[in-house]
Image (cartoon, rainbow, N blue to C red; front, side):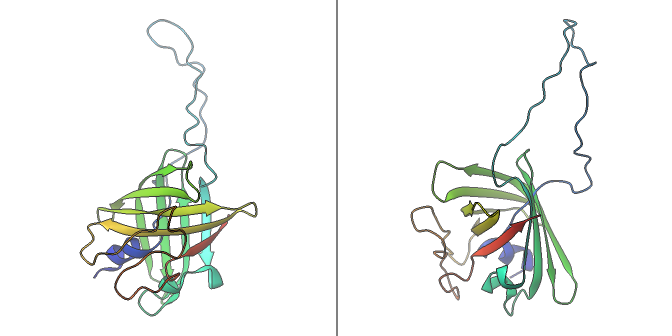
Length: 181
């Protein structure tokens, strides 16, 4: 099983698009359309507490990520208002693993639900739940659902954190904590 397959199979996936993209606001007030009216509207994108940069390291790493297979020392996740994400995991040998894709959320549930459509390095779908508390701590748990040859089961708002299940996975092994950066 590859690292990228297993990473989203059981845990975090999470952040946004191209890290080299210039996301600075632009002034389009001088741009006009064919009717000669000024177009100064800007789509603010997704308004969610999930949007932003997050870091998990030390005791915040899930037992799965800190454990013998992954041996991660940090995971950086960036969720963008345009519903893209970029994640970079670093293992104890200093190797980095980059994951990108898009996400959709449903914040009407408690905890909120999330579906990630990973584009790189492999195409997979992951589903799970998250919560951002008043101290800007993100609690996050996702499981790869497509493809899912080992039959892992993703957490849901009804089953709560620590409910990911499947071969070799203990309750709570896949719960990750992040601090807003």
